[in-house]
Amino acid sequence: MKFPGRFLLLLLTHSIFLHAESLQERGKRVVNECLDVLGGQQYLNMQNRVVAGRAYSFYREQLSGLSIAKIYTRFDSGVSDTTHELAVRERQNFGKKEDYGTLFQEKAAYNVSFRGAQPLPDDRFDRYKDTTISDIFYILRVRMHEPLIFESRGSDVLQNAPVEIVDITDSDNHTTTVYFHQITKLPVREVFYRRNAVTKDKDEEITLFSKYREVDGIQWPFAIERQRNGEKNFEIFADAVKFNDPKVQGDLFELPSDIKLLKRD
Image (cartoon, rainbow, N blue to C red):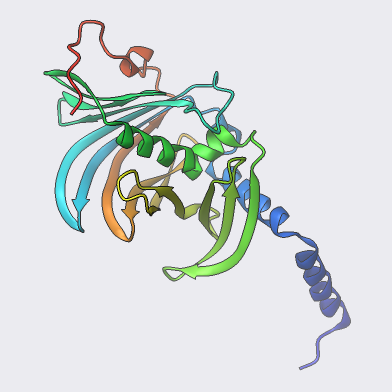
């Protein structure tokens, strides 16, 4: 088959462009394309988020708990060292009446119920912190000002979908590997590793994102699944998502002054 000279020139030009683009340039481009699709400046200006739905916990792949859940997240713009400090607070409420749950602050976390507030063990808070700081949605909202390295690992096929794979590495040499759908540009999978406080081995932490919907100009995954070392341990299916809800006030992320402080297990 013969091709016209103009077509061959276009192919050659495109090939040269691809080869001219470095792995870091390609990685940064893929991440920027994702941010644009998520909502761009509207996503970056997000002050809070409320996700309501059903949460499931698993132990050794078997369902161990389920509940109606409402997760409130508030971002803090006053944190400068976002590599090491959380710039977010989160309240996870459970049950129809939201009468029990967990409060995650910058340096501590508590189980909260009618009995009082019980501090969580340090290792559970540390896991939450590591998971949050490594999360692609948190990175895009909070950490893009850092000297991050975005390096493409090329393309592949994941669950019959074409993906672009990018390593995002911070100044502590901590890496999150993110798989972006080539067509939608949205994250479908992320992987990072953390040291297990008990076994001292490295745990592989995997999160899967699916069922994206647009809410107020922002794309958000309505289904999120977390795995540890190949075993599913958490899943949430959202029924409703809100952004920048004026009803999400600061006192939601504080312990009441009169609450009873319980002993840590």
